[in-house]
Length: 340
Picture 1 (cartoon, rainbow, N blue to C red):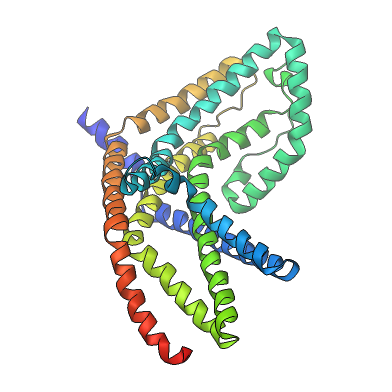
Picture 2 (tube, helix red, strand yellow; picture 1 turned 90 degrees about the horizontal axis):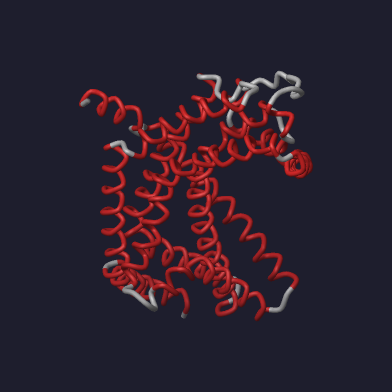
């Protein structure tokens, strides 16, 4: 029993590859959001009056942090920050496993179609309508993950098989099964990365704009410097703990997702033509999912992540603001000669 537990722990343990993947996705999301937000701000500035521009900038930044601000009206800000960060982290770890239940819903849906031809016909129509979008998604995913090419489109006949009741075939379902586990960790990383990018764009553009309005052209650099320093020092004290913790949580989910996705290839899951075969394959997936969700390693990581996020929330609430005030006082003093 003990050796089995150690085996599961090793199976679900994250490594450098998992951390690198999460960092890449997070940074790419942040960079993309930053660029798009800057373009939006510049276009708004060019084609709109100053007041609407300022309003757009402020509304964008407020939307990015509104959930914490609203919740902090009812509970201590530290607990509000901790609450939302913990939800994100737990979704990345636990939610990735729970999301595999989608297979049960889909296969259950397929199983009932032979008994209801009208429902099957309507489902096929809807699925075929969405197929161009789905195939585009497959192409994008395949370009990003070369391993997906190992799932071959054999163009088997669907007639006389369970797939005749679907608007897709086994190839499309296998591709879906490969992509499905990555959904939750990807969303967590993309959303958090985009929030970071949007906020950085807000401080960057607003700093340049405010500096220009107050001090002319020389104020652009000063405004940029001032706001970027303010943004950085507002993030670093707690961010050096909070951001890596979120990335580690996503890495745990990603490691499981990678294992599940490649099981589809290694074990040739969902290549059968009967509903019994699909149920058997999904049973293997649920067995691995159960092992993951009940793994001692998974729950050790959850506890460690939650405790670390609690520390980060405490620092953000009670330490960061004090550091910001002291640093910005120094910055204000150093900039006075340039503004004279």
